[in-house]
Length: 266
Ligand SMILES: [Zn+2]
Ligand SMILES: [Zn+2]
Image (cartoon, rainbow, N blue to C red; front, top):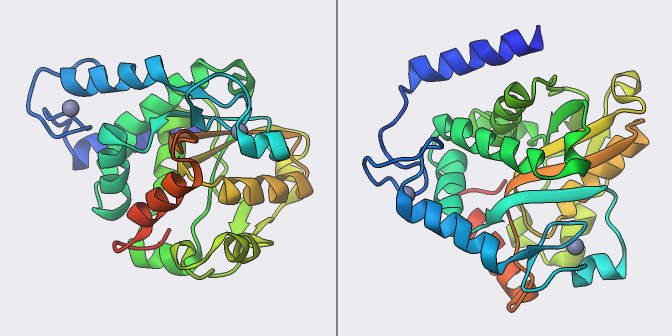
């Protein structure tokens, strides 16, 4: 039934937004590969893979293999997090347009990209249900859609898994994260999420989906709520992620500000 729903969703997207002959990464016309990317963006994506190593746990991109500094200080409440690349170039363009410019059709190539990320990570491949990071109700009303839900639906369609859009709920309208420092951000997120129905996720391996992993605080709070709500374990997949080296926190901070300001908070 859910697979059927996924197919209906795909058909609906095709109807509303006929497949674009332009690259989803940079808007260049023509010469696209099977994923809808031009040669420049394909080269950019493979260039990242050559020089970046994801942290073994959180997927933050580093210039050498191993654990990032954050995970070295204490492991996050998820098994593993992975992304297609850094929040730069074509991924930054696409995520920003999906999120802030109403370009919902980009959830299709980006959801397909997430599926390739999941296929490449055995710890993610065992998930049995896909859960999007929820938006605060007020923000959802303002934007009209949750980009994480659109990505989760397309990803789940690829993986032939159910999507659970209702078990994980966001409780309060938190102030925009960009306006806060790190301790304030963490406090802001604490207990912002809750599982509405324990039974549905009991003991299950959940694949949590979001557009971008920055500090990882939002994903971590979602995971804590999911675990409190009975989930067995959680893997996280996002389109883009942060880079640790050589700019570390400064870059992460700048990246968040670029993402969130002045367009709109997440
Ligand atoms: Zn391109
Ligand atoms: Zn890490």
